[in-house]
Length: 436
Picture 1 (cartoon, rainbow, N blue to C red):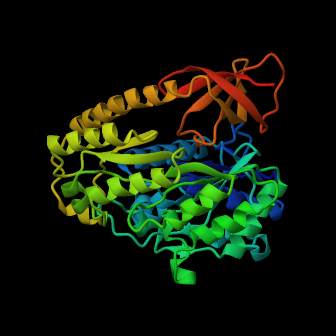
Picture 2 (cartoon, one colour):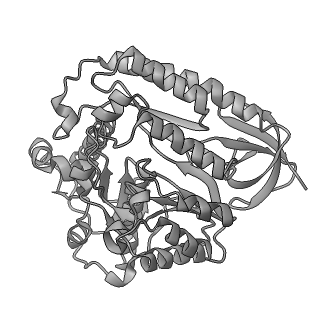
Picture 3 (cartoon, rainbow, N blue to C red):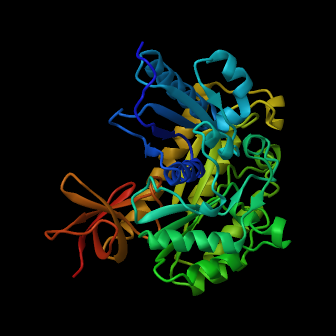
């Protein structure tokens, strides 16, 4: 066993789970950096001596990945490759008492809102004046911007309120200041995130204030794209569509997790909305912004789900032809109200139902992509891969949506906007030539 390192500390932050966790890691990085502590994200060189694992506890697969990552880091510590292992994030928030007994080699466990306590481990204080300062782990031309923390909803399948607490909005002034800072760092696209975006403002302004926030953000010079993630369908604030329509730098894109369409399932999930209301909402959104791209996520295998419920989802997808659809299998989460329901479907049946829906949507995605052939789009270049450039249109978010494969005989700059004419289309991607 090697002795404790006498070199200056170098901290590696490993982030698991969603973009909200990524923002938390970036804020931690910024605080450490401001305190003259060397910090990296997802370090491949293994030349660090301290690790912070920012965990996810959303569903079983995420928990398993988080625990395996912790065990991997503990093994490195046992072999003398690390001095300390710290764990934070949602899994730690929810299960730290049990985990600290099962994995005693971890030096300290922290919850989701305990950034100052993490910094105390490095004998430094939280710098309030650095609010909004982050070390980006994304490419410098795009970033996530968290506008609120926590959730007041009581969806029966979801443990997020247990891990993140009640909804707390940031002020418009705070968010705008952070956005301006990001733009000054070279960010051209900002993705707004929260556990529930459309609840924004109710706690501090006593009204849904997302539309007001969007107006202020869209006025920021140099901010080319603003993208909306995680909009809750119940009591959807339609005024954001008016702002989206009048402001050219707000992407015609909406990520709105629906989870299901069958009324029995929506009721059991406590989604506070009916199937008919969802259909009407999508019609209204498309009436106001015909070119909008709508992304959703669905849950397969919720307790009590029947074949009729699965067929209702497929009928819904066939009728609405949503642009992007992600599928999760139901995870039986302790202390949620759905945990009291019998989880009678096997993991194999859940996976089979999810795959059935994925394959059904795949055909829709292919057909919709075919419709884009011959059209020219503004594309943001994300990276170069295998000799070709890869980018996205305003209708596609990072990692989860379609990409555009760009053929160009000339060198292009990462993070730049170009015009691309689409000449090929696949199930999930487009391909085209640069238009001079």
